Image 1 (tube, one colour):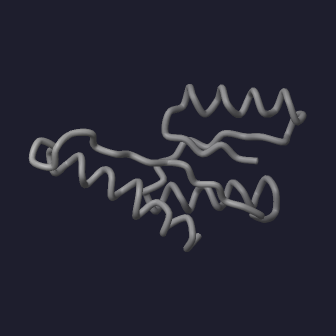
Image 2: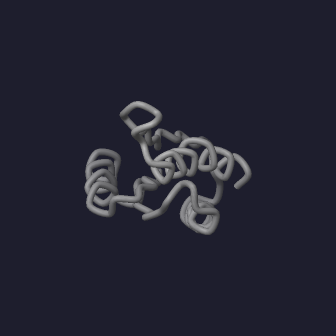
Length: 94
């Protein structure tokens, strides 16, 4: 399994815990931004190189600006679209 995460410390910690539970070579970490097309391509290449195929994708990346619409800067909305909408489409295409 691959832990794909933008936060390096979190990704490494999670992959390490899973490798301890399931055995060496069963989990790896790939630092990536789910809304970045090149990062998703790298993730696909890493998955195919390590495991030969992809059986399942579980995408739980999400960002939600918390405030009233008029108080949230457009850059925060753009980031949420980047992760919440663009990311799943890129993963499905890959």
